[in-house]
Length: 385
Image (cartoon, rainbow, N blue to C red; front, top):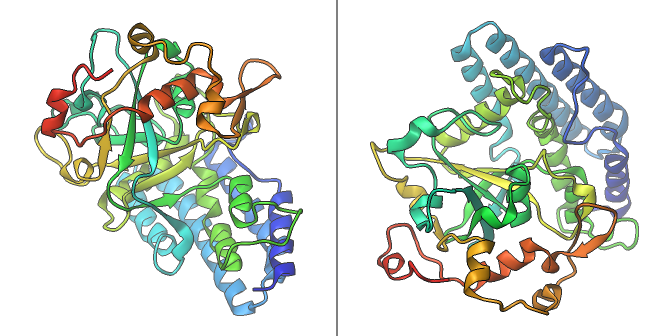
């Protein structure tokens, strides 16, 4: 691995004008916008990256895959807009299988056991929620599953986030004291498709980019794989133009990707950035979302695969916790966490994450018992505040 080559690749990646979330040009038909976007990326790869790759045969293979992925996405949108959803799905699955395979090993990420994740729910008609109430929508209620970026109508899935802050943003800043939260942890290793922001990827390769010469092993291979997968990350991160529209073309590719994952053995879910989070206002705060579709469908109840993959706490909210305890009175929550996370919320003043409502609820959840859905223990913890 040549350090100077890696540094040059990272510099070019950092300066690349394309990043997400993406905003649409109002004057372009959505398929035209996507095609132009992908054409721009192909040109960037040819002009900025191709000559930097020492192995010319590898550079050619990468270009072939990027152009193939571009054509797959363009064709899928054409078939979809012409009402041929079957053909759109078939073309997508063939094209995407080439990308998320052993040929591009770094297109997915292994989530180690015990990774801390969170889930939120709005519920104003219950005084108490059970673990089942905050798990994925039960199969008997699949009619409640509506369309969203990574949601296929009628297909239950488990949505999780890196932080309670990200959950709050996904709920469009709902009243924080009324929002129910649970902490989750995975009890087996999970494999997820990784749709990663440029700045986060660069930091993972070279934590002190431009300041020292420490880089991770296999940095070149990681960068090459990231460049190949980048087009699908871009298209899955286009912001919705019309919020109240019945048909959102921005959801076509993400939903097809979720459909691919739901039927793909060896891939459990998708990790993706939020289109609602302003990442420039965060420091050292993980803020990605995760979607885990059901793998085994039943008439009622929950997916056995997901039940055996996670433990979670009894849901709670800040209003309930403030009634039960005043543990935090007069304390600086950042000191309790001992971290250096900060967030800028409503003005230009940066606040220690542990001092916010999100830091408080995460600390409360860290002290609560985790258990699987359906465990006997949950029956005994109804009043575990």
